[in-house]
Length: 421
Image (cartoon, rainbow, N blue to C red):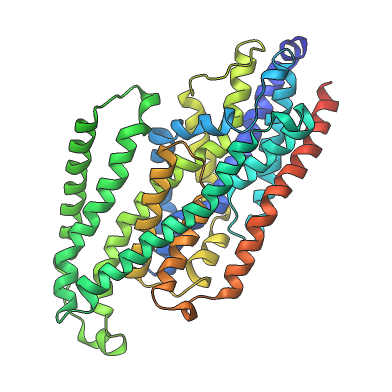
């Protein structure tokens, strides 16, 4: 308690700096998840992708980012044995933030699309083992999270595979693909608006004290879906057949219909990413704030201050702008060849999976989901459509992330303990 009283302000300043650094890493590495497919499919430029991401990442972080944060903060390690030594938990949270941020920066420079969720959970486990003891780590929770890393890409891949098959059946393998593309485009865009808004209304707005019944949530989501579908129809209704382009690529005119549709999925993917991954950067920061603000009390649960959500959104946006393009190129162009229709299916599948998972409070990895969705799109064309060497490198970088985060957190924990102790 004396250490908290003496160094509380310094600890809070460090927490804000490390939190910004961590969320900068989230933005730098995970822009690929929100935007890589849109850029890879040629639907948006890098500048447009950054512009979309700035608006919708921020919206996702502020409107729907509060729910999953508590899972990261109090579900991975049990701090009850160090309630009388709250400074240990502060050292641990600071070490976890710094460790995950450093590893994310290294991976981003290399262009590896790693999991920010992996990074922070690995860091928390590393602190838990050396700072409290192996028994403080909730290994059952870790097993659930590990299972989600397998399940979430499979779900994302399955949904994207089914979406690609639906576009083939309803559009590409018909007598008039362009006419059918324009007919079904509003329905696909309705799904984008409906899925994102429904799950956000169900669970994402609790920290804003907006409580709607299930019927109200469904009604609002349907209205938002209809509105987005109508806006989508306005975008695609005047697209004409381009016979010259169709000679070079048989479905060039049809793909033009999917290009504006990808703007909707890009926005929803950025929103979904902001709602899920802001927790990785601000969960430990919120824990430090809670302890310092209460004078050393280790609370199992506390409200998420809106300024911390704003801080997380700001850090993510800064990362997007400065270094995001490196990882974006890996996901958007190197796994499989993407067209606007394939990119649309991958992003709609990924956004649906991310938001559904984040609303259950399970800290899934956006990276895994989106890579799974891109793999599903590629598999719809056969295994030969995938660059298996790139896929293998991505899988290896995923495996390394958890231990890397843990080892770095152990080192930083002992360093911080020495400085303040």
